[in-house]
Structures are given as C-alpha cells and as structure tokens.
Length: 435
Image 1: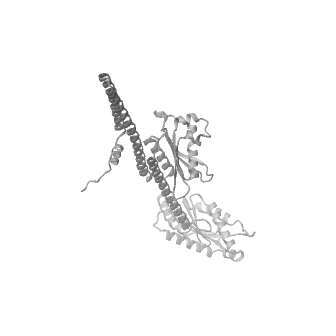
Image 2: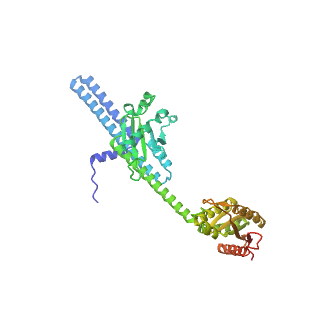
Image 3: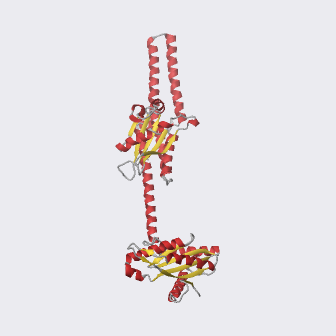
C-alpha cells in the first residue's frame, strides 16, 4: 500500500497540535535556554578574543533565536487555540444529541468554551418572542474564587447584549474587536475596569431552519487583544452551526409531538361539547374495570339520554339543539365527582363512569344532583328558554365478575330501555339493570 504524501507544513502543524500544554511549556523553556546560552557565548567570546565581528555574530545569533522563539510561540498559540475550539466542537456535538432542552444546550456550549479554551466568558443572547428585547439566556464566566481573573459583573450585563444587537441588525459576525475602541462602552460607567479585563470580543449569529434572521447570538470575550484568528472564527462558526441544527431538531420534534397530541385530542374529544367521545370511552372503560377489580369498589356505568329532545330541534332549529347539548354537557361535568368521567356517544346520548363507590346507596344522591342540574331552564341565544328531562340506565360492576366492557354497556342500555318504556308511570328517571 502506497504511503500517503503529506505537506511538510501540514505535518509540522499536526505535530504542534498534538503537543500537550506541558510539552509546549517544555519547548518554551528550551527555547529560552538556547537564547540564554547564545547570549552567554557571545559575552564569553567577547571577553576571550575581544573582537567586534565575533561579538556581532553572537548578538546576531541571539536575535535570531529570539525571533525564532517569537514566531514559534505565536504559531503554537495560534494552532493551540484552533485545537481548543475543535475539542469544544467535538464535545458539544456529542452532548447536543443527548440534550432535549434548548436551555441545557446553551449552558453546555458556553460552559465548554470557558472550560476548554482561553476565553474568559461566553454568552448566548436571544430576543424575546413577544417584545423582541435581547436577554442573556445562558452565561459562563471564569470563577474568581478558583484563582482566575475577577470580572466586573455590571459590565458583563451590557457588552453581550450590545454585541448581539449588532449581529441581529447586520445578520453577520460582529468583531473581533477591542471593546475599548468600539461603541460597546458608550453606555458603560466604568471604561477603565472593562478595558483591563476584556480586550477582544466576538459575536456570531446562530441560525435555525435556514431563517434569514438569527435565532440567537453567541458572544465570546477574551483578555488577549489578538485572540480570534480567521481559522478560530471558522471553528466557532462550526460550533454555532451545530447549535443551530440541534435547536432545529428540537423545534421540529416539539412540533411533531404537539401535532400528534392535537390530532389525538381531536380523535378522542367530541367536537361539539368538548367531552370525551365514544373512542375515548372504549379506551377508558377497560382501565376503569381494572381499577375496580384492584380496589374492590363499585364501578357504575350510566347510559343517559334526553327526553323529548327531537321537538327542541324541530321547534328552535339544530343550532339551538346544539346549544342544549353543550349546556347539558357542562352541567354533567359540574355535577360529577373528580373521580368520575363524562362521555358523549352521539346525538343526545351520554355515558357517565362513576368510580370508587362503596355502596349502592350512594347512587340515588348522585343521580338526583345530576337531574336537578339538567332540569334547570336553558337560555338559548335566540332568547328562548327550554327545559329538558332525562332518562338513565345504570349497570353496577363490583369487580368480582369477568364481564367485558361490551357486556357492561349492553346491560346499561337495557336498563335505559326499561326506564324509558315506563316513562309515564315511573317514579324516578333512572333504574339499575336487573339480571
């Protein structure tokens, strides 16, 4: 297999990037040692031979070593800075796939920048959805209590939002710049303190879903006056792109979840009354049966319909009939206990699930309360008032039988048919199923 040909400059850059901080310090110490040796040799040669050319040669050698050191140090700092942000990118990209909350994403990005680079502060600034005012959503700064540089808290509340505003207006990168020589300090009361702390500021836009307007702004502050190189800015842009993609995924997932929830609600909610519908009853009744089995308490299933509802539609129209159904639904909900549920099957038929009943003797009180609410006059939008009566059949499930939901509804329906057939002679509007 043929070996890959590598550019010598690229090979040197890669080797430097692979150096650790400890190795870099060793290189610096070694370079200064060579400079010192060269300087001492030049002095020694001058004392031994006292010749100007040899002394000049020593001084030239010293200057050469100093120049090499300065160039090498600048290159190492530059490449090390790039390596730091590449490390941040890798760490952030891994964590963003695991986080499902934008606030946690913001916190992770700014924390990684401050912990793993020479930046002294990082912020995520976002405009408020309602007012448009910019606010700092997440911030990370060096901790003075751990021996790092102390920062002015008053100033940090000004600079990030001011820089972010420039980005929002231009939709482009703002900086890098020295805040002392820019307009960022125009509203600051303590220019001296700020200029001693922060000498370089960079603000970059974070875009989502290919929107033209930035969704957020990442602001980074550093002490070094020359800190953000072109390559470093490209790395930070990659970081912003990763954050934007993660936020986009979160928002798309959230929209899908909300849409799913909306359609599920539509599928299980009666559009007219807002009550649960037949499909919801089919899901809830088996669960209520299981709860009755587990608790040993009584489950009452009430099948209820309105008496003489058709004449209301015929006399006042279907819109007024809908108003009656809506009013009945509201009154049923108010008349039930917290552990009970109300369903509309369709037309003027409703189902009540009354759980956690201890005795059959509790039923008459509940049913009379319901009847008193339903029988109150209903004022229609037309100005007319109507009064409605009702009939109900009830099945009691005590948790000891193996009855299924279909059996329970069928028995309640038979009880309802029985009480409606005795409408003229009955003493109460409801009856229990009798085997």
